[in-house]
Length: 199
Image (cartoon, rainbow, N blue to C red; front, side, top):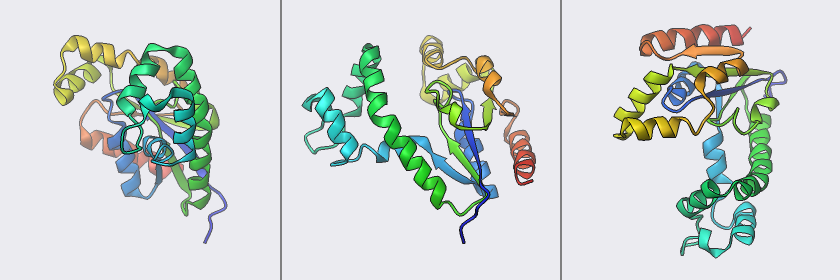
């Protein structure tokens, strides 16, 4: 049975706000989750057309001896060079969107959530009528990241600042899940929002 009326929503957050936790809660309730990070990994698998295109533009140095993508090397290149970053995006984004659209078409669910860390930064938010933002204040982000990744405060702050400020992201949100007061409170909000989205 193919469901005709599908509600497709973007889900995003900031570093250490708990986006993955909220995504898994929606999945437990019955939402179909499309993980943009997983899609991005799948489209550059060994021998894939996208990987061949990356090799053509970036050279053999971004390919490991076994034929897989050398993510570390590619990351170093695109962090240092904005034009190269934009080139990579122009190669990968159309393939990511095409794959996500196929997953949406094949999903046998009324509620589809596309979970993407850089939804706002990449401009992909424009594809969605509704966006859920997983929120935690900046200081909580810093504390969590220091604890989670054994980082210094300075490194945690620098890493968080590679994304748009969480307060700024609120402007893009249709719905907000506040994940700063414990799992039970977060779960209650997710459940409430899931029921609203079923209407």
